[in-house]
Every structure is written in C-alpha cells, then in structure tokens.
Figure 1 (cartoon, protein in one colour):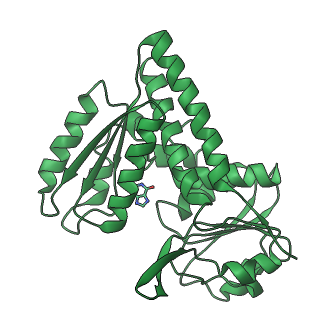
Figure 2 (cartoon, rainbow, N blue to C red):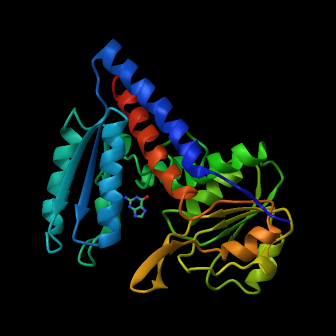
Length: 288
Ligand code: GUN
C-alpha cells in the first residue's frame, strides 16, 4: 500500500484565506484590526525562524504584528512587565511567548501571566482546564491543526483507536484531550512506554510528537492507519547541508499507512494557520 499524502500546506492556505476574508470584514464593518504580539527571548535559531514566519503570515492575513525580541539574559521580571503591558494594550488581541524560554525563567509563571483571553497558544492553565473539560477555550495551535487534518481525512473519529506518542504540554497532552473530545479511544505513549511498537500497531490514528528523527518505522504501523507526524527535526544531509525530517521514517511508514502528513508541508503550516484563527477569535471576543 502507498499512503495518501495529507497536504497540510494546501489546507492551511485555505484556512488563512478564510481568516484574511474575515479580518477584512472586521476592519470594514467594525474598524477593528486584529493584532498579534510575539515575544522571543534569546537567540535560538529555530525559534527565530518560527517567529519570522509567524510575523509574515500575520501581516499577510491583514492583521497587525508586534514583535518583541529580548536578550537571552533578560530578567524574568522584565518579561513579566512586558506581558502586563501587552495584556493592557487594546491593539493586542493575541499574545504568544515563544518557547522554550531561557533556563533562568519559570515558564509556568510566564505562561500564566498572559491574559487568558489573549492566550492564543492555549497554554494558560485556565485554557488547559477548559480544553480538558470540553469548554470553549483557546485551543493549542499544533494539536488543533492535527485534529483538523484528522477530521478532514477521516470524517468522524468516534471509536477510533488513537495512539499519541509524546506527552508534552504543548502537543501530546492537549492532543489526547482533543481526541477524547471527538470520542476516540486514546492512549498516550512516551519514552517509558513498554513495547512501544506493539502499542502503536493497535492504532487507527497515530500522532507522533517525540522529536526523534525517523523513530516510527513502517513495521510499527497498522495497515491503513492515518499517521500525523508532528516532528520537525533538522538532520545532516551531507555536503554541509541539512534537511527537515519528521518523527516517522516517511519511506517505510508510507508503504503501510493509509494516509500520512509529510515533513515539511504537513502539520507545520497548520500550526500557523490555527494561530491566526485563534487571534481572529480573540479579536472578535474582546469586541463582543
Ligand atoms: N515552541 C514550539 N512550539 C511552540 C508553540 O506552539 N508555541 C510557542 N509559544 N512556542 C513554541
């Protein structure tokens, strides 16, 4: 079997177009321009790339982009002060603090300092609790993007066996909650899971979010399963070059799976599209 390739890039483009059309109407009819503030602390090269592309897509969707770059050795108090300022700024509807933060900062404290109504990442404890209890919430962008791809591919997820590999607060845990919300039967596997390949072989839906290049191979996959690869790993491609690969070994998995997201061009573009959608939602909510 050769898997269908799930085109996240194309789907994300349709979402961004819809967001842009809605933003244009909001401007025309209510004189509101949604604004997204992105805060980057330090020089992490991958984070810099993400922040740049978030800023570009925000502007392309007709929104205002506010970028705040702070030095690696910035005091936590200064970052908290900036967040207070952004919380109070009526032009800012969404706030995203790029993670990871430098080791001297308390990430939980920083995340929970963001006004939950502006928390477009969905990382504030109030939004985490709302997602877990099925209440209206800001939903974390990457798991939301994965859920949209799964619904598009499979229709209903009810009763499907889903295995999420990875238990991070950013992807694995919220992904499990969202799948449960769609009535899938959910297993969260992680680095300490015994017989991991066997556990994954039960799954109709596999979401791989471990950050280990090519870890999931074709022999782990139930024939016909839908595989969502969240990994974005930069590996040596020889000749001084690098390339991006996912957590799945694409060649062997695509021989067995029914459908698979590519890396790049799968989950990544959906994350940014969902971030823009969350920012639009936040702007609509603050203005009734
Ligand atoms: N770092 C990696 N992924 C994310 C994300 O979705 N949001 C933020 N704020 N930081 C990240």
